[in-house]
Every structure is written in C-alpha cells, then in structure tokens.
Length: 389
Image (cartoon, rainbow, N blue to C red; front, side):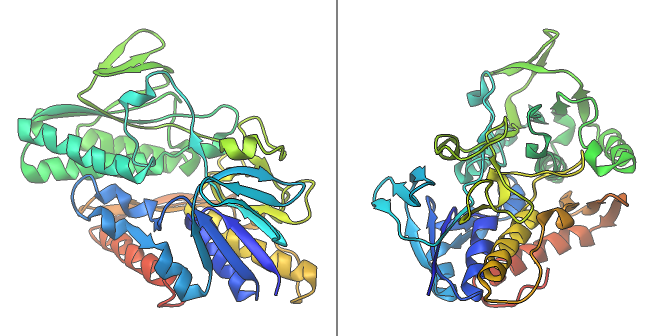
C-alpha cells in the first residue's frame, strides 16, 4: 500500500487525509496541534456562547476513526527533492510516495500588530478576546475597534467574514447585557469597499446594518501603526480603542518559503489546477498555503480547502490508474459561500460566483443553521455521519 504524508491538521489537511484513506492509501497526518480547530464557529468563544473545547476536534479520535497515523509535531523543514520532512521533536521522516502541504498561512506583519487580537489567529487568541471583553463588561463601557487588512500581493488571502461576524455577535451580546449604549464599536479597513467581493447588494446591506446598530465605520485609510490605545492611520488620524480586534491578511508559511518550492510574491506555493505543486510529480497543496488563481473576488475559505483535499486524492488515484475518470480542477469549485452569523438575531447567507452575487437575510434561523453546521462538522470529521455538504 502506497503511503501519503499530509502536513497540517486543519480543515483542508484533515479532509485530504480522509479522502486519501478512502482511496486506499496509507496516510500519516502531522499537526502541531492535538486537535482540528473549527474556526468558523470560534466566533462564539468571545461572547461565551460556546467553550473553547466545543471548537476542538481531537486528532487522536479523528485518526482512530479513519485509521490514519497521527504525529503531533511541528514541521521545521521540507526537502522537496528528496521527499524528506524534518520535525521539531521526531526529527527526519521520509519514504512517502506523496506529500500534501496543508500548513496554512501566517499573519502579514504590520507595525504594532502585537497590540491586536485576531479571531482568525491562534486558538489562544479567541480566549484572550473573551477575557479582554469581560474586562470591559465589568467596567460597563468601552471602545472596541474591529478590522481586517489586505494583501496587495495576493488578494485571496483576506479574512473579512469572521470579523463582520465577531462584530455583530459582540454588538448583540452587549445589547443583551444592557451596556451597548455605553460602548463604542467601530469597524475599520484600509480598502475603500471592504466586503465588495460579495457584490454591491451585500455592501449596501452591510452599510444598512452598520447604521441600524450604530456602528462607526472608517474605510479607505491605510493603517500606519497599531498602538496600545488605538489605531493610527496614514493621514495621522487616530482611532482610540480599549480593545483592537484585527485580522491581518495572510502570508505564506515560512517553512514553505525556505523549502525551495515555487511560490508567488506573497509566499504561497504555486500549484496547477489539479492542486499539484508546479515542477513536482508527488507534492500537492491545499487550502491557505496554496496560491489560488481565480476571478478578482476569489477568497480562500474552508469549504474550498475541503474540496481541494478531495481533489488531491481523486487526482492521485486517477494518475495511478486506481480509478477511472478525468482529472479534477479546483477552479471549477471557486465561489464564496458563507453563513454570516449575527447572534440570535439570525444571519445572512452570502454567495458569490461568476453568475451571481447575493446576501440573503435569515432571521433567527440563520444562527440555528450555523450552530447545526458546527455539530455536523464535528460528527463528520469523527466519522460518525456521512459527508452531506
């Protein structure tokens, strides 16, 4: 039985491991965390609606369910020419027929970024956001700034949706506690029209929500520096804040950058449309670490990372003659699909493709739908129910 090594235990990496196992490969998964972290539902950790444990899917249970070898360790070096991988604790491993890169991305470095917290950062940051939010609640007032940044070298690496979700959930939470009128919430972003990849209708709906919930907005100003007490913009105007919740754009993983693999200007590994790394027959990449090519509105999302994981396994099996069929392309699956949660008020179903762009309000039920998705995701990853979406 041929062996495949998957580096990274996130949404895309775990799906690649599952799909490769189903195709009959002996799979080893390496992750620096002992769990899969369900980022889409981590937005409720700061408001206490769920606990950090609810967001974690233990990789030891995952590996037993799918008969996958799991190694908890950190990847420190990849030798693409020899197929060897070096881990921090275990050292050198090799002898794999295929390697799948699913290492994710790192934060784009910005001046003073240490003064911010991100809902898309480490799992520990979500807990820290909750703690800082509780401090403001005890005071009975506070100024909170919510924002996300861009990456001019790769516009697919922007994380805007989770920031909007966190903003609306915190707004709802503070209203429920009766202190929203003494709290100042401000959204900021360097681009003139943040969220425009969802389409003009979605932009108008977001503006209406900002007005309805009395949320300030500062857009089109580049960020000069983050300070302990606020955000300094390029025109030297200053947004005062007691808490800055900011998600920077992504940048390529340093291990990939140092490996000699082909990368784009932002450090993401170059792949062809079958997810195979350019110039290498047996190395593939999925999710955030890969350079995705598509329409101007293309965004990296969890569902695309999962699809890429499935495509990798399918294409490897087809190329080996294990199964019949045509090679598949990830480009056929590029779209934006998310349920933008707003707390128990509901949510908005956002969708974007070449043919359509929409944001449909779903009062109350939208929140329940996302809750149910979280349950489904966990059960599926543990092999307890079949994949349905």
